[in-house]
Length: 254
Ligand code: MF3
Ligand code: CO
Ligand code: CO
Image (cartoon, rainbow, N blue to C red):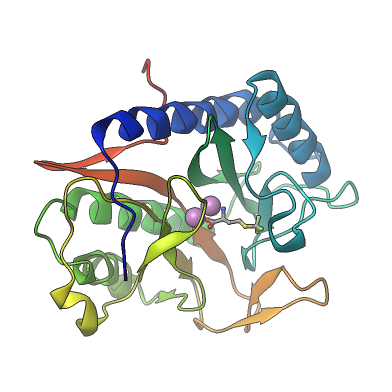
């Protein structure tokens, strides 16, 4: 396994791509409300990336037909935006955006709560965000990759939630998906793999209210919880520095 390890000059470039992703979220956020279609979200993403001279890394990836993924309620990941799918009061939706700019990719996703969302759904969304943030805070040189999953388990297990095992975080940089794979559950084999400065990867825990297993729709992409219960995910692209980790998928100027 050769993890993607990048020099400081490439960190700057991934940071620039991450800034575009973060500003794209800022651009679409005010419009994500009851009545908008997920196809409408995709159109806004496409327009924003075009204006920034960036491109969607997802469009055409293994034939993926859209610029972002929109995963509603029981959809764990890879929901396909569609003009017919309308967000309604009470939905929780993940929008996942990966942008390529000047040859470097950055990948992030976040949850949106549509109108009045039930308390159990809010708690799930919060736990998934806490899990991602705690895992990021634990990263740094010399830290085993297994620590990410261990920390995520420590945050979500007390709530009785499960962690999807079918999808992983990933190295990223000159390609969207690279080594290493990032397990969001504790994997003892990764105790021996240590983070080193220059590594760039995503952390993107998918947290389920019920069982961890998924089923894939006939479209070949949409992954849903096998029991139909809710799933929530947050994702950032991070880089390992001499003294910890930096988040690339945040705005450069605040
Ligand atoms: N952004 C996704 C990830 O977190 C990948 C999307 S690939 C697509 O890895 F083809 F589904 F768009
Ligand atoms: Co993503
Ligand atoms: Co990712």
